[in-house]
Amino acid sequence: MSLNSPQSGTTTKSESANVQWGGRFAGGPSEIMMAINTSIGFDKALWRQDIRGSLAHAAMLAHVGIISPEDEAAIRAGLNEIGQEIEAGRFDFSEALEDIHMNIEARLSDRIGEAGKRLHTARSRNDQVATDFRLWVRDAIDGLDQQVASLMRALARRASEHAADPMPGFTHLQTAQPVTFGHHLMAYVEMLARDRGRLADTRRRLNECPLGSAALAGTSFPIDRRMTASALAFDRPTANSLDAVSDRDFALEYLSALSIMAMHLSRFAEEIVIWCSSPFSFIRLSDAFTTGSSIMPQKRNPDAAELVRAKTGRITGSLVGLLTVMKGLPLAYAKDMQEDKEPVFAATDAAALSLAACDGMVRDMTANTAQMRALAGSGYSTATDIADWLVRVLRVPFRTAHHVTGRLVAKAEEKGVGLAELSLADMQAEEPGITEDIYTVLSVDASIASRTSEGGTAGDNVRAQAARWLAALDNTATPDTHS
Ligand code: ARG
Image: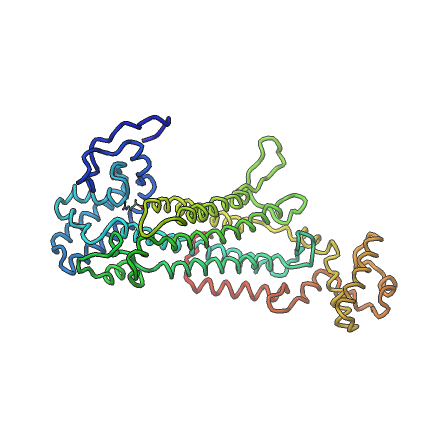
């Protein structure tokens, strides 16, 4: 139903009590009750996981003799057919049946009668939804992990292309020291590797099976929880039935990992916006990832990057939203927890789209290496190289070298020239020991080539880093869906 005005539906009752739990209920719920209670509109996304869970549960019930093999066979066939109906868009989802669990179970009973009504033995929707949702989040992690790997691969490839191409390195967004464009791109590979690590960690802790915890206290039936856990590829059953039905840490950890990843993607997107901006012009995106302006014909706007930056709000919002839902709930299950799904679904969609957009932009962008090189040498970016030379060659203490260099920068600024254009006499006026040799460290290329410390920006370092990552990513055998 849709509530168009605050009054609508307040007195209307639905025709009858819920067929699944209506034994004690003579009348039906009001329309408002239905509207606030129903979740089928969004939790139908769990249908595959719900059927998987029910198949495992039924097989276990038959295995331990709680239901007959014939009933199990009928349940299996019925569930598989329901799966086909949903897949084909032929399933009639009912709001009166509240959620995906009861929609599927009711349909099963319609199709196979008595046997279908035995499926819910020794379980509750509380352990059922906890299991389905864990399976869903686990599948989502696996999907996103492939996407992150693909983006890392794209970045590492572009980085090896530009391993030694200079760009200005910034701190405070002020020109600091020359770095290479490849080095800059590889920084994001490291960030994304940590994101993958956080997702893998979340998956590992998530991978325990709540099924068999029943409503909250466990069950009097002689179930085999290890059997269902392993059929659903969980590492083990959860240890405490109260915790199992009331825990949503896995969803929160997942959203935390996505929030950190989204923050990384947002920083990258912000850099793309800056790099595309005409005063910078470090890169160009093609028509595939930009839009035009309806009034200013010269414009090429990096909307995809801007929207990646903005999607972060949704993802972080989902984390904060679910933390807020959970924080006041006494053990064990409370209906509040039904509000766990939409934020997780929304964050997953936003993360998947953002990853795809970044992947596309990285493959699409062309680097304006001449422009980056020109700006890499501006803003006295090799001043640190002078200071380092004074320390290395003249054995001047670094602090003193810093002061001398500061005076040289001031002198260059005064004359309106770069450091390399200062005469030897000008240099020697500040530090008599300076020789011609100092000019060898003043070029952008010399500055970059000298940064050979582990993790530094020297071209060979960057090439090696990119190669190491490309080899490691190939070994994870994640098929590259883009090309
Ligand atoms: N749709 C519910 C949810 O997502 C399923 C669990 C309902 N359990 C209950 N005791 N009413 O949380």
